[in-house]
Image 1 (cartoon, rainbow, N blue to C red):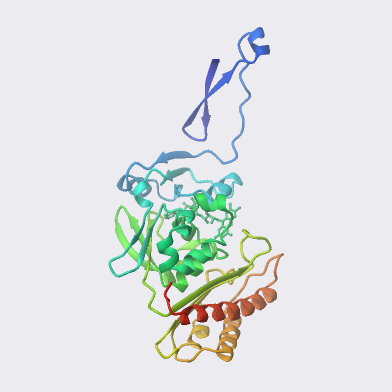
Image 2 (cartoon, rainbow, N blue to C red):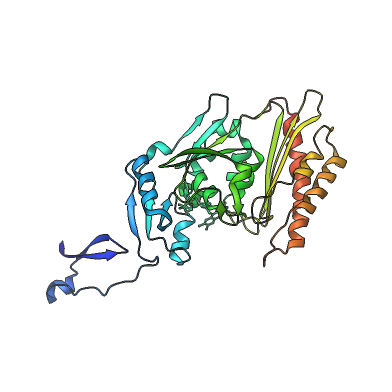
Length: 334
Ligand SMILES: Cc1cc2nc3c(=O)[nH]c(=O)nc-3n(C[C@H](O)[C@H](O)[C@H](O)COP(=O)(O)OP(=O)(O)OC[C@H]3O[C@@H](n4cnc5c(N)ncnc54)[C@H](O)[C@@H]3O)c2cc1C
């Protein structure tokens, strides 16, 4: 039976009502004692649940850099718990259900909204057919628990160069739609990632959706990575896309790498080595060698830069072979 309660301030402005149940011992000894105050893992912050998109954008414009958007919380909350991030305020996007959207565009592409979780994309059969590279990469991002909460847009805004998804966006020539109280604009994926954890978004902008263009017929793709354990960030990863013409000549190629520099890397010379040619082992070897030269892997305790380069060569050859097989399969694009 609840017998006592007290309110405690949790961060700036959040009140939590704690209800204690009287144990048989305390029942005999009179009212319970006040619990000592407990420290929270994150520093104090104000919490704002977004009511409408317009209200959220206006609030961000007003609070500026002090406030951060909260989407899945899978990068932001660990950083706050470690006190690597100390935003004065969070604007929670989760009440904005309309931003959880996967929808076709008029020209056969796909748009994915700011609140669409990884798991929703990964399990969407339409995306698996139309954009198989994204589905394939998502199955290699983190663990199911994290994929149940994390969002594609949150991931891209976070701009971790080791993440799989920025490389996928580059390889697919995605467009990113940014909105603020002042207006909206489209940003090409190639212009979005500026540095480690740094994007082209202004401090008052929200990444509202991502648009993936329709893939031409006879397009094959492949995402591969090497990580020490399943679910870990990759030591090296590649997103490869190839389009063949009716004669089997490569008309378009795109290669992008994660954990290969301060931003996802797209070595254009490597892709160029494939275009206009009938792709076989020599062309693939040439592209792999050019990619190895072009990337700038950071190295880590798990894999030094030399080993990362070696992985890039091996993964490029494997991914291109698989993308080529898929492009040549009769039913492509998947
Ligand atoms: C144990 C663990 C393992 C992981 N492994 C991987 C992995 O292998 N590969 C990988 O890619 N990631 C991995 N992650 C990170 C995970 O993918 C995050 O979910 C993702 O990076 C951030 O998405 P989110 O929706 O959780 O964003 P949040 O954590 O809510 O936000 C991240 C940042 O983006 C901002 N933001 C969020 N949404 C928007 C928006 N729409 N517009 C503008 N800014 C926005 C926030 O303010 C914050 O600064 C891992 C995380 C954990 C905890």
